Image (cartoon, rainbow, N blue to C red; front, side, top):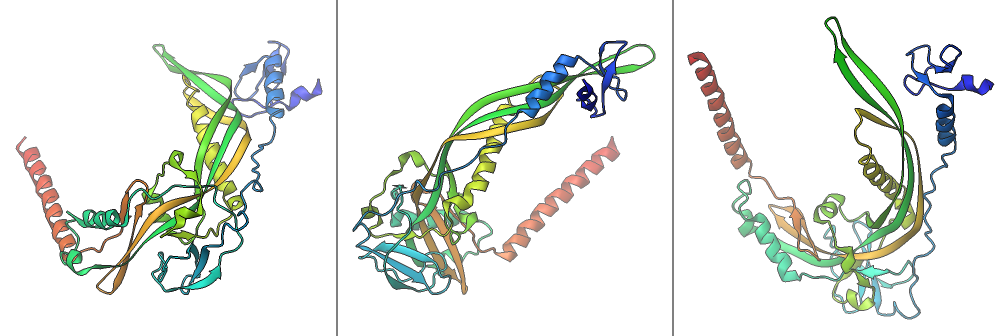
Length: 361
């Protein structure tokens, strides 16, 4: 029974010992008392929690079929070095990302075949209209921007995205407390109760996305999300006709740590929401296991618009499925300081009025 002296107090983490007077384990630091069987059971549960099992099979992805890439050509950007692909009829002249010239590299070879594609739902005309609406009503935009800026290039491009489907089995143990407050004529008291709380459950995750391209600006990409992956269809090379497709340069396995962190956090949040009625709740131990993990390679449609104004390039992006439009705009500094002066004057007037009222009262 010597191992009993190794127990730590769940309340203050001090070493607890058997107290013969109360026939219980007792902490000499905070005077908390515990049934030996309860401590033994809790100790066994914590010691038997397995390590996280969050492995993915990255060898399940598809390969190109024989002859399927015969009409697909590869282009390379002279500036950013990015590799993009398209069908043999595509007159690619500029990189959709950096607007630099691209040259034909030759027949496409290698790499994995996309599993799914989200076809373009909005056309080039809608993208141009999206830019007009995007600049409309912007008070701090230089007035001549709309008339003097011109679209240098507009390209429809399929951006590579990895999606991750899985189910997560989780076991989580918490330390929790409840407080009871009361008082008499001399003192106020707080009585704290300590609890060991356990939860076990499963959550399903479908199409958790991760960008497969370093060339697609992360801010632009995150701004045009989300995509409706339920509308994705089986990939066919015909969908590339008239469009470019970015060649992934981030492997599926390179995103696994990021995806596992996201899945774990979402699971912890969902399970934590079931632990209610306590004043404090702290996670004590946890275990996560992935089941049915599946990775898919999906092409997502994006319109990239490059415009030039005052010698500076501005890049805009539109979600080719939903039509969501984003992009930075130039700032009219004179208009900015004019508006800033009006707002400052308004705040100053408000403060002065409050001061006057206080004085009057």
